[in-house]
Length: 487
Image (cartoon, rainbow, N blue to C red; front, side):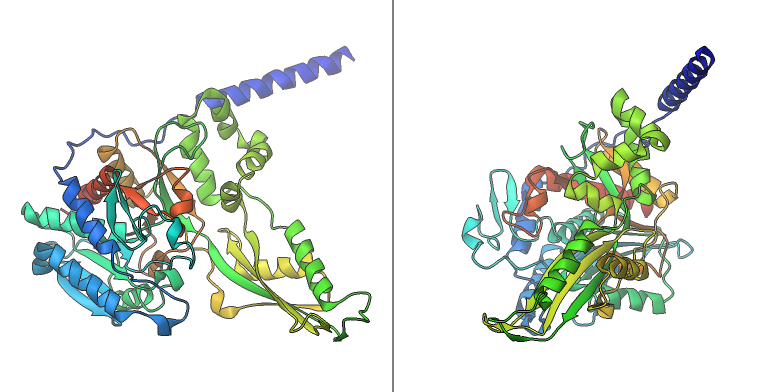
């Protein structure tokens, strides 16, 4: 017995030593750079120009016949008037009607170009919620230190911010060595197939192979990462895929006064319940593993110990991190029933019931593996399972956090915001950048606007806004990035 106790004690001491050694050996992954002097910008003028852009109702609707050409025409005219130096120097090409492709030609044609993306369109304001806005959703109002309006965060802040950066650089005589493309789609909110996809296809025909592509997706998170007080710059190095699966149950209909033991509605409901209770497994891998590697060294000793020893504490970490919807979305392919259809009258038993379930696919999974999972979880031959082929988009590739494009952007952010902690990130939604995956393996997703706990609900929601000074800093990041990458 003493020998067993002694062996266990030795094992325990060794385990503790290994855990502590790994924790103490966890070194910061942050770029060591000197801060740059703040670029002299008129933040009030920047805010005024962004506010003007928000007054155009460049809304994307699922029904393309609702497209409001007049609003997009007005918005693009506003851009020409607001950025005259840029429009005098850069080549502008309209792609498929309203896509905008600018080219700032570099002096060294041997250098691969860089491509900065954003989208002109915004989501609609939910009918009946207009009165809940502090300021009118399309008023383009500046109040309380914020610019208010639909698109301030998603994504006109990026469109106008990128143009501000180039306009500023031209005004001080800058000329790029590396060619810079600015590509602004106009239907990102409904898939980007008419805008970004067409622009990317055009660049492909011209054999454009960018050094990197930068789009929206990550942001400067403040107060969102437990254990890290500093602002955290989340650079998206990948994004999840997307597929919608249709479940259809069929049974004999009839009069509701004589229902069978199981109705078609009940059969489908039971299948959906099984599917929700048997979700795809969690996994700490890819971009989320990189996130923990970058954040761990910046945390207090306790959380750092857990981050450094995922071989031992991975299950606890996944359970804790995955306790919120946001954390859960980064650890697994998510399951979200979104549409239910059955019946035509309250006293008629329907013969068919249909449901749509939306899945956001974790890198490492695929639309095919999702379909197999659904069939196993539903486990009922009376329910037909099929993917809606038109919705299938597998996860993106993963840009290496060790690659120079990521490191370049990381250095840039810390030059402008020295206190920022920069980390890789998995984008759980979809962006226009997926249409550019055939052009380069280096796709990054980041905008410099800060996002706090109160701001998450504002994107696609009520009271979308961006701080005046925060917006100016996001323009400074674009300016510094262009200086580092192209000048």
